[in-house]
Image 1 (cartoon, rainbow, N blue to C red):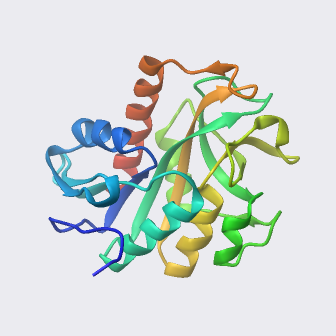
Image 2: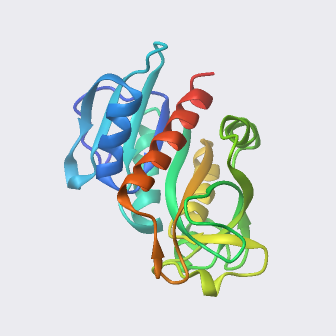
Length: 222
């Protein structure tokens, strides 16, 4: 039995990962037919059920930051998850706009948590190419590009060259997924710009969460 998750229902082989438990609930209601809570241990809400097309899918919260997310991913792999898509948020740099959807082509490690999974500082972790390509096709208005992952609150002004945005867990998650032989891709919502001076309002954020979730569901259903 995994150390963090205490599932009360079987998990699917395919999962959507989110940091925020509230986002997990939102997407479970949006994407699943009669979702059942499959985990509430440690406040890491998880839901499992069938999509309208009859595909089994799990939606699981991972908590804040790389250390929490990678531990949850390890538990999910132990419970049978083999493919996953992260639907997260990020702080955008000058090349993106508030509300943009970014399909991650690579994630640069700018914090130490990725090193626990073999990714040295400044190195890039790359997502599964098949999931990423189909995710980019499913999100017609999205952009594909590199991001950077920090262990502290991401600040766009600290972005390394070539990175469009910053978050707190994609690089460690991608590195951990490789060690688990688990296919993982990520789409991030630009939820803030300029050090938090501009923040996406709740209604706009939820619309983009649902859009990203529907795209992830479509990719994982094939």
